Amino acid sequence: MKNFLKLFAWLVLAFPLFSEAQQVHVLSESLDFSGSIGTSQRKTVILQNESDKTKTFFLKNLVGNIGSSQKMKVCIGEQCYDAKRDLAKIKLTLKPGEIVTDFYLDFEMGIAETRGSFDLVFVNVDNLRESFLVEAEYNVNNPNKKADGFDYEDLTLSDVYPNPSNRIAQLDYDIKNEKAKAKITINSFIGNPVAEYELDPERNTLVINVSDFNPGVYFYTLFVNNKNIVTKKLVVKK
Image (cartoon, rainbow, N blue to C red; front, side, top):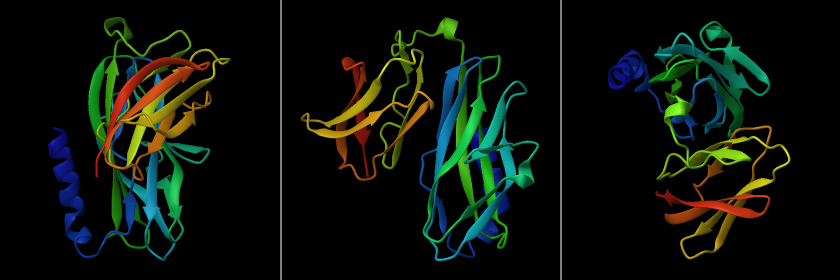
């Protein structure tokens, strides 16, 4: 079904897109919303305008399947829109050379186990031949049927994804104890420190730019109150 929907979207857009090079690119990987019934997640979409002109895009189509009990909002900075009701109101303006990092999708998992996918098609208001596609998948689980090895007293942490990654890697988390100090450290295969990130209790996703990492195997470690909780592997490819 997902392949059919993607083919449909590309058939709608293919002919005009081939007429000129795309200058606005989605740098983040395909979004993956995986979580338990009744929870919500926010994912960052990173865009880059590689042209020397200011460009404004609007959300033209929402292609795919979102369940009746699920809700998805598109957020630009602090302003959020219902993707189904506010389709034409959702606009993004990118300055020449700008990399946009305050563009998010909020997804409410709903009340039943399910999975699916959807795509957001954005089109240039001044040139309908120019567009970009944001791809997303979701997988809603029943927590009573799933044992989460990363579920601790103070914090719940997902595995890093996508893994392997070549541009952006992400971790989803939920800090249940506001007094807990949590961080992620990344080390090379031989143990050299590479990066360190504090987990902000006001957010639930850590975005890691691995495009500057050398290809290879890395290890990321969760620390809570300076205690080593768990270490996992991250593979970076080019």
